[in-house]
Image 1 (tube, rainbow, N blue to C red):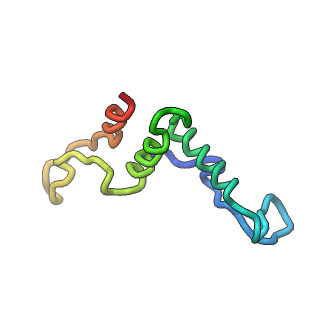
Image 2 (tube, rainbow, N blue to C red):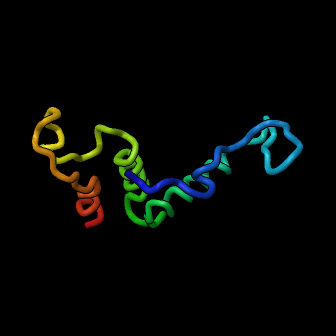
Length: 100
């Protein structure tokens, strides 16, 4: 699982007509705010945005961290309760494949 999100990745984009603080108007495009957050995701996962397949790498990182079907577990962890348990391995084995 990824480390907890911080900074702009931890805060929602606030829209509306509130007069206080940095609030986007109802009709203002939030696309630029989302693009800032995408850039922050690249930094969060330490992916160079101009590297080959940068978008695919980011999508895979997000899938590994948020989609249970992309996570790897040791076969013994998949046994029913009462089975032999071992410490979970890392979910990032696939990184070695992608980065080479």
